[in-house]
Image (spheres, protein in one colour):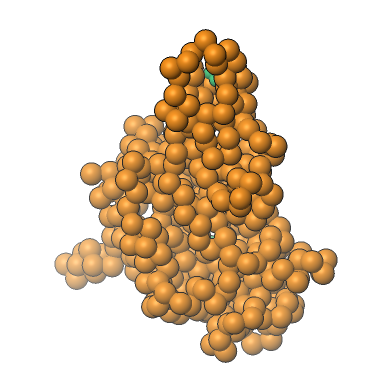
Length: 373
Ligand code: FES
Ligand SMILES: [Fe+2]
């Protein structure tokens, strides 16, 4: 009797396996989450030059994010208003003045206006204002372009910024890291053969840290106990004695980011921002994961290592810093890839269980079900 009650109280069910393999659920998530909420796309410094653009697959749509000649950022559906051709077929590029559709050569300005069409004089009643590219909402924050495909987006403040403020206990702490002015030191793209939620759930817990992440628990010894930092408001995990930096072997990294407080030094702060971002903060750099679901069993993760601009400009070797979380990423993604095939097993039809160190993941699952409802 006692054992049963112990089990009931200490274990919380996960989502059933179908949530990770069912195409219909994946489609529902694309609609209810990725087409409805704010999604983090381009690093804005990748679009520094006027005319530069990137394309992203979000919520079943292809989206162009570009920089106009006046420095403004825009996002549009990558669909020609004539007969629907994809306009940009590359993941990134640069144009001088207009996007030209490869099919019949309608062209559009960087602001999305219809600029011209062959034989336009034969259509004197064609109103260019009516045939611009379909706009997508865009907000810049932390040095990224966040987009929302919904006709009316939810409040960015309430749904995105609030998550970060709640993690730190205030809205200001994140600003001290000046993520919008940090420079890209390294980017690695991971093609993970697993459902996006397995990746998010894995990031949320540290129960696996001592098994999977020998380097990380050497740098952050308290992670051996399996409790992540993100379930405690304002808390950062302390570097171990003898650890000089957030590097794969604890060697010294770079000087502390200007503006950090004494208490943010020698600490690591991690958090997930639903639905698809992970923020990792070290005293001298930040690591940002953007998670892009491709299929029910495949996810692209783009991971940026951001450093003070002076560090990147100096050409100093960021390798030892990058190597720590690159290993963590590989270790994590191998683990979730080992889970993915089992999600369709009858052994997992009802799902598994969260132990106490993972209980907070149930909040994410509850949030997910609410979105789908
Ligand atoms: S489909 Fe684009 S110009 Fe015809
Ligand atoms: Fe991990």
